[in-house]
Image (cartoon, rainbow, N blue to C red):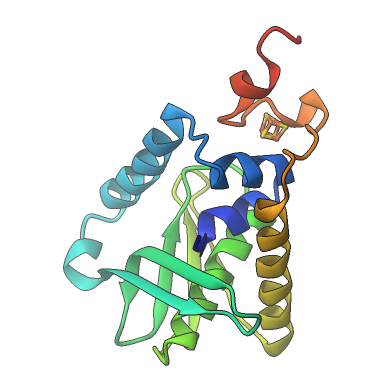
Length: 177
Ligand code: SF4
């Protein structure tokens, strides 16, 4: 299977979430949230559809893992990835996701200078670069995701206090609170 930015994002949050997603256990509203995030992006920046493009790329990592990335807003001339987050908090997982995009683009010899993560609710943006060191970190994350999704057993749950906003909350905790 392909390792995606979603899985790399989840890796930063919960290994169990990575495994569940990769094994086809998708909570219905997960896709709604993705659509909502995209909608917020379109509504917050209505001009972007004219200037930037959606792009899908795949590649193979240095360790032979198959990768796929679908980037909603990419500026091919400047080589800039734009990611919009509906979240009202900045997260390391968002940075990891955009670095994954930059990594996959570069593997395809596509100009990928840096990314911007835009937080309309915070009225804030964050620049994301991909240094040589970051690239090694992305490769480590890809290997880690690959190991998790190939393990037979579902990883242990996190403490419930860390689960409140997770789309898998009901799956993991129904009847256990
Ligand atoms: S509910 Fe908690 S344990 Fe379950 S996948 Fe989400 S973060 Fe992980």
